[in-house]
Image 1 (cartoon, one colour):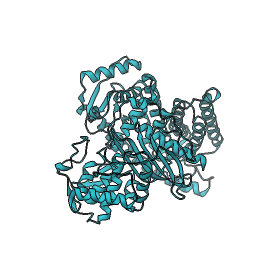
Image 2 (cartoon, one colour):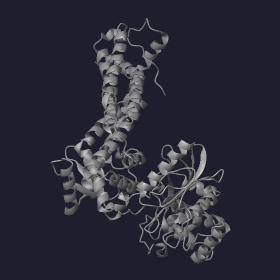
Image 3 (tube, rainbow, N blue to C red):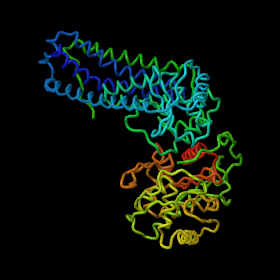
Image 4 (cartoon, helix red, strand yellow):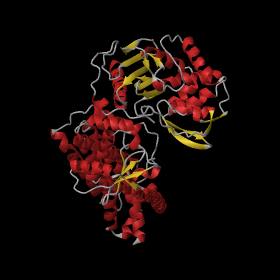
Length: 595
């Protein structure tokens, strides 16, 4: 049985190369036509296309095995290159088998990771279990879903399908308000209701078997993206508040914890394209109806007929001719998201209402103000202060490799903000600068000021002198972190701070990375940019800094390239992370519109 199986399997895999490309092309057209439809339809298209990817080589293999075994190797009437391909089939099948084996190991590690989570997680309190049960009842789930707490995961997770469990990071209980946590739990329960864990597991099996084809990976990735959007929609419908779900996702995106590579089997609230999910929840689009809803089934049926016709056409030969294989932020109050945006229309070339109470969009090349909203009001600027801190540090030209130690003096006693850098931790001055700018780490900023010649007091005087040298007459700085509400400026002067910071290549390099690894206590630690737009698809951000305190609200300053223009965007005192992201996205769209 093995002797005819190897050539048959080889030809089936080779022919799937062009068959998969056809399926991928059909899926692209269908997904484009349904881009404004309910995400359930796009999810169905991806699922059916992935199923077709599995069935086509399987059916082809079975058809070849039904032929006369002697005919499978009788290729004397075919071109020389097919004869050479025949000789390579055993090596090709062996290579495929090794790849499937490695993918099986990857899948096994993921299942082992899930099993460890279930075993080590601790039961949640009775109060939180009752909240989850109430949400499950609202979503139509008749069974009780256990809620467990686990440290070391960066997002709520759903694992298991026969006996599903919802896992919640213990740290979120103290970092997010109850309404935000309920929104995240509703999202996870939506996965349970749809048996998404089972379908995700089947997806992983298809990926393991057809690992060599890029169309399979693309379809699987799109399927996971659409799955998260479906869960978002179900959670928003059950809560009756899509903005609350968007706010919860935005706050979750600000956490630095990342999931391990083996976590693809778990269903995470941070999965998919998070920024697009938030934007879709904030500005829902009308779903397409009518004939478009029947389009996926019709097109897939046509594709299947075409493939079968090709197979029937080739059946008159001994063998079908193959082709070559192609190559830390605190949560805002939940009521903030429901708060209406300022109705006043900003001044400037662009007419665009934004939620931020103070805003400025500046053309860096011409210096022309494209949009302004109360841009000269003096307000707290929170961690945008750290841009000035970084400039003063770099101006001092101290040794970047000098070791700094975090001491109790660096601990925030004003806002009691969280920190991932413990007292006693050691790092270089360069590492502290990266932590302060990218992760907005307050203790690192304090250590930079404390190690300045003359100490923290001399550092503050240097900051004030730097502000005067930049002509900042409405900017006041009293400490290096931005925690004090006495650190104030205006949107217009923050834009000037951004222009000055852009002249420091080190600041631009650090803040334009979406993530990096920083050595702390001799061990590399992954740090993510607090601005989740950095590195996101369609965004070309050259310099960036976020900020938040209760007095300052959500702040964002960035220099980016959009529609061929270099622009500076300053947003001060937005109601929440979701509103801040929505403002930035609206500005980018308006820039593209004006060209």
